[in-house]
Image (cartoon, rainbow, N blue to C red; front, side, top):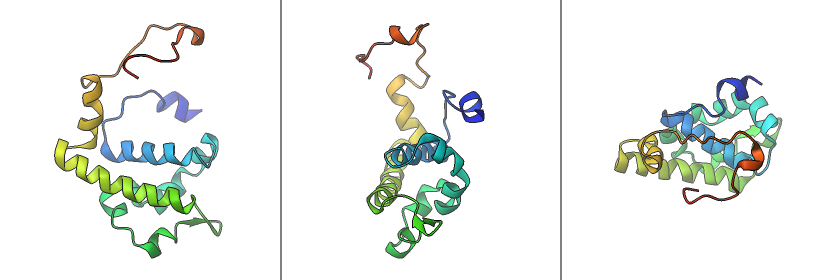
Length: 129
């Protein structure tokens, strides 16, 4: 409930927080959203507080040591994707100054607001999407 009330839909400009949300999005393929939120502290510990420069340096041994209760936190392909995304994020930071700058440029640096009152009014697809 606190995530929904205090974080969901709140604009994020911090690169680490954006990377954290990217990792959670990847994890959704294997875990439920409540499970991910319940394990946030574990994710933060195993992924070095979502520091992309640290994660980009993960060795094979480190990658395969990311376990929770004796099992890999995520499947091996997902873990490899997290490391690869960290490497790509570093490239984006070099080119655009920050990952935040890169992401927010698609919407002119400000959140999009819509006036839909009911879920049934939301279109399935929009030109921006």
